[in-house]
Image 1 (cartoon, rainbow, N blue to C red):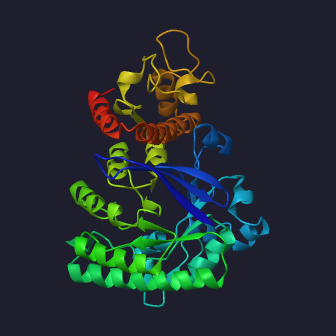
Image 2: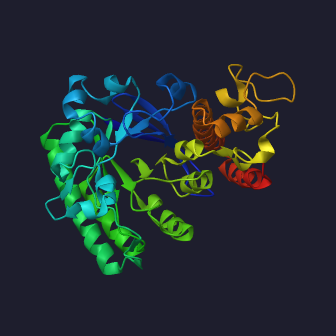
Image 3: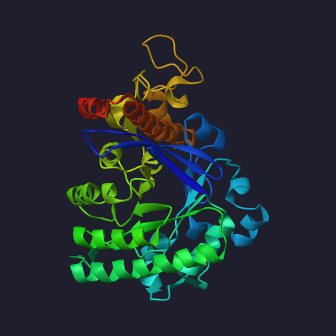
Length: 390
């Protein structure tokens, strides 16, 4: 089941406000989806995700297939009961992870032969196998198996001919994925993935073919794969708004706060990225006024929270009240600096909560701005605030 309702559009851009209804609940768009690779968003309890406004999270088909295995997840009726998350879940197809194995895999028209990075077993992933795995996972949104077209191969930029060959195979795999998804009578939704590298005309060919297949939703893949930022922005400006207006649009693996705002301006409804969680574990914090490195010595005696405007547990404690230079319950930069320096696990747990809260709050502010017809003003203020510095 998937229903997408378009609620508002922005006259100054391609930005739009929507509502996505899935089998496990309603998702307000535009939305950021926290990444839960192994069935968990690292260091964050499901209750905390709900409290910070997460509406839908990701699971990783490839990694969950490896561990714990389909027999375990099937015994719980799918990922929702297994990981105790009762809201929607999107699973990727496993294509990117298989592609990332490099010399350990061989891609053919039939699928991908590879050795398990866990125990070395010989395995095979095809569009049909990916659909079978995702059906067991019972994710609300499944993704077609595609080949991720790299920006470079052996240090050389991927040629138009190479990008075309990859895109055309992904297109054929899309048809096979859809046929198998329907054969399995999967009650959820399947998205097609636009490929084509950094070539706009290939992107358009891929898009046209997928639209003809009539998927319930569409994703833009093959970005954030090593290309310069200006190349990513060029494809982001070309592709999303050309997808059907009555269906959800998902930009895969992107990105920074600036990327999210620009993506929404170009018509994207859904985003995911490991950046807020991975960067948090490495001590990089996103705030309204720019990014900070909590390990830097300048934070050693700083009484301020990470972000004085933030109401997350790390910044405001249980009060949910932003810092006012007076009484407060949150954690200081000095304390979080101390935790990072000592390698205490509470440090990355709190910074992960903050970064995810910031991303989800940013999406909420964009939804509010679109509802109020002031997205252009929001976009300008966002850029001004982020440039101010912490």
